[in-house]
Image (tube, helix red, strand yellow):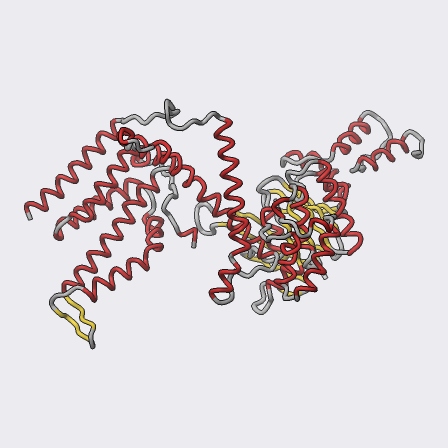
Length: 266
Length: 285
């Protein structure tokens, strides 16, 4: 199950999108998310769809691989759809006992499903084409103005990149401890809820111990390298806009303008 | 009574461009009471191999038999297999979780369905056999030293009274003294309880001293399988795959090349000493 999560998994293809500045991708994702909720009518949907399809095509990430990320939210999508279907008041289409299916409900449910799907596809396109390090770098740089409000942007970015870096390590560690306890006869698969919860103790205690040990080691290693937070710290690879980034910004602005125009005109 | 691996293959991500053979056509027979060393470079498939032997990993194709029974048969109980084939993972001290040492060692026997008294009896026995003093039994396992923690973790598997004991790099990260202590205790267990022991390692020196048979793994296949003397004769091939024969093997080869009438088959320092003394016409002390 843990392996189905595609968020945070980099898929290297070396495409134009991969080479873009992470700030462009962050901004682009933001624009896309706004557009998913702001479009109006079938033409607007078509524009959003074409834009998303083009981006996926350009990124070179196989569509099948992207869809895998949708599996994680399938239950959420079904619940949302159900609520929209049955609880939207309006013109009744089918009525069984007390449950009414309205025309508005169907439209709302379909619209919601499309929005959620696009939301996940759009954000996973960003994480699939950007390494976690680039992402936090981009975020740190883009949020730098917040420093004037005394928000520790660098520290937050550092925490994020450490957290992201540790996900695969802890997944691996979980797998290892699970196997070691299974070799001692532990049973994680059978039993009722309480038995299963109890069976987690031999897994969770060592996992926490090892997480603390790793955190301690990391803190020591950072101290030993004289890490003192973001003050006066320079980057080995400073972020710098290239021509493709300028073109990408232009494309994004045109896309947003087109959608706004459609919304006003239609 | 043996473990038999018949044409075992293990493939990761089959059918994708990243397809990778972790094990390729493994045919092995692990006889009863043998003391076996499995050596190989990192990523050679050693750990994958031993995890197949107690059913933690499932072969993509091929069959594994334990005492003549197919472990992949539908009614075969994997949990009973795991209590017969005890596996001690690398850095086993990372799996400790209980509040006292004794309770932690009892975890395995309790999972086997034994009552508390019987489990504690076995835990006592297992802790004694790895040399943990009784005064420590009620302490937290997290207060012990690294070497002690590891011995407690090994006792946790021993307390299940396995017929086969597999240890994955039991000496990794220990100082020479801790290493020798653990290996000596394992050798003693083998001699006294007549259990089959499989020792995974990448240190030839460790393995050569104790085992009667060496299986060399390389890129998911068995490269050599035989007595240490036979295997170390291929020391040049071993070097090509990033392994090395024990240092005395090199010494003996060089002595022979220089014209001394010594046999090259010595694999331990003691053997080499006898052999050199013999060559010079003396019989030791």
